[in-house]
Length: 254
Ligand code: DC
Image (cartoon, rainbow, N blue to C red):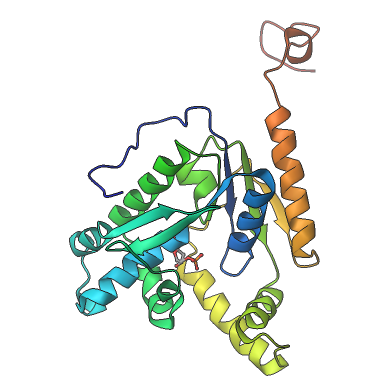
């Protein structure tokens, strides 16, 4: 998908979109992946598109201080999402960058790239295009606000920064981290939260889930139950939707 050939027409042709947003290391991606697997939907990691654009820019050799919006859009054009069995593999020039996008230099550069409005527009178009042909669980910062204001379900995941840091380190180190390591990682996370604060927005109609004291299986179970409930929702019949007594003509309510 390039910026030129993307199908970004409104609507999703009846496909379901579940939006999962939240700050860094809130477990969005792994939860979204698991929820998608439970429901037989595809997982879309919008952060991977910002990261892949950053990886493409780094590959180009142009120093980050010289990355203009126009330059970043030409880098974004090298990025694509290749469907795999359960989600989409981010690619640069047709080559998987699944591991490259987790490198520290990409993590350092991506907040700047994600601030560029033209890049945001491009990423949002890619995510919407995918959702036109698949039932999706999309995770990011603004899936429930900018990308799918009409999502079938919106979830905003939060967790205490210390707990987020602890989980991230366990994943990275495959052992229990020390208190000192957790404290350092918590500082880094709080800085990242500050860098991404403008685009990390909880939609008014999102369900807020604090995962600090939940296992991942519990989070997944809750979200899957919420999706199933949302899909059963139907327009109200006149019996359910209309007040039995008409409101006063002057609009006053007593
Ligand atoms: O979730 P992540 O760490 O992979 O996100 C990478 C960067 O992209 C991070 O700086 C936040 C940003 N991002 C964003 O601004 N909007 C999204 N929908 C997803 C990610």
